[in-house]
Image 1: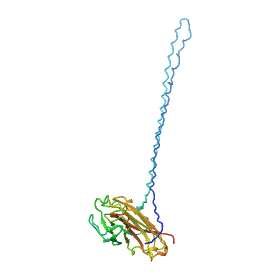
Image 2 (image 1 turned 30 degrees about the vertical axis):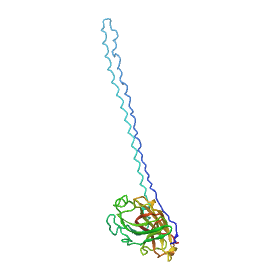
Image 3 (image 1 turned 180 degrees about the vertical axis):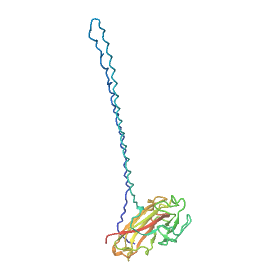
Length: 316
């Protein structure tokens, strides 16, 4: 189909953390000592008595005076008081952890639709084909075979359904590796006997599940996964407001090689669409597509945790 593309916008917030800490040092006072006072006392008076005056020639000598007592020692000075130790500085307050808003954190706004593909329980390694169990989705498979004078005998086909991961297909299966979750996923798989051409098959979200409203923009978040050992082919995801003539539908898209996904893991993807208000009431459609371009043999990829949300937008 020919679709009219509108740009997609992806917003990522960064993690910020602030921390500070500080200890003030201890400060001690100095001893100040009082000096010992000098001995205060001195010896008292000199001999107090004086020799009496000569009397008569026969008079008796007067008695010597008594020595004065020694003065008392002076009191020692009081030692100075030690200075008070300085108070330790308060520890710095830890910075608040920053908030991380990644693509897998959701776009915010009103959630209109989710699918985790867990409604139909499968056993480990089991799968469905021809879209069985994918009640919210409509499969458009592809198959062709014949003879081409340049290619010789050829065959192409694309199929899909539900898959419950088995050991060796993903790095973990209970649960599946983030940003997927749970045990089950949607998958598309294909086969080609020649690498030429670009046949494809796809799933469409049922067109009676989400309707476009005026003055609203829409975000599609989903996890895209690669089964180990299957690097070939391309995948595409489209988000569009379905027009009366499908080729006139405004849309946004993601197209990428399957080999760009982590082997045995999943990656987050986001598409955004702000359809004209004239499309109010029309279905909002998600298309998930597998191209067999460049494939020789089998290939496959997986989808999990599909979320559609909406926020208010200026009239257009």
